[in-house]
Amino acid sequence: MLDRHANAFDGPEEGHALLREQIANGDDIHSRRTFPGHVTTSAFILDATGKRILLIHHRSLDRWLQPGGHYEAPEDLAASALREAREETGMEGLVIDPWHRMSGLPIDIDSHRIPARPKRGEPEHWHHDIRYVVRARESAALRPDLTEVHGAEWRELQELEAIAPQALRNMRRLGLAHP
Image 1 (cartoon, helix red, strand yellow):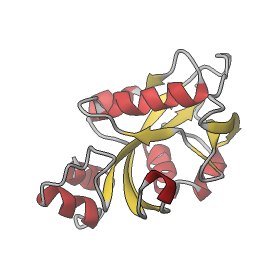
Image 2 (spheres, helix red, strand yellow):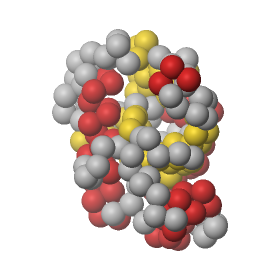
Image 3 (cartoon, helix red, strand yellow):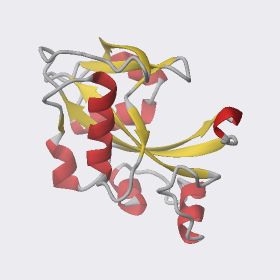
Image 4 (tube, helix red, strand yellow):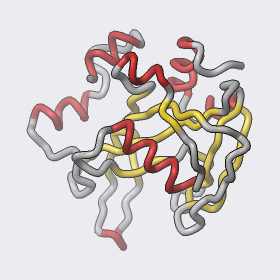
């Protein structure tokens, strides 16, 4: 999947070096107890026009981000992203964008550093985030899970530039999101 994603989006073949190294070493990257990194999934929830995005205010990171969380094997990666989107926003009727079924690819793969959480016994580590575009009806009720997030709201798509610029470029390149 990493090679096919790199080819589809003109990424460097050596991209995701740590993730590739962990795969080559046989690390259980699907377990949240695997360090230095493990797989997460997230969802870029777009409205029907592709002009607005639904973001959550992440409780522990204190930032506006796309919904996401730890992958739970043997769940399908796209299904994992959809599950996280539903859990964190409380929205019904969310669906994975059809482009993913046609391509068999995520819209973005991003490895990013997560701060240590001593209370949870977690050292600083990496999340290898497999990202998907999810479609929503803005009329669907928004009921964020306030045990996980501070809130959720529709924001201008341009805000994604500060959160996930490569994902935004990929979505625009494919015509899934619009300025």
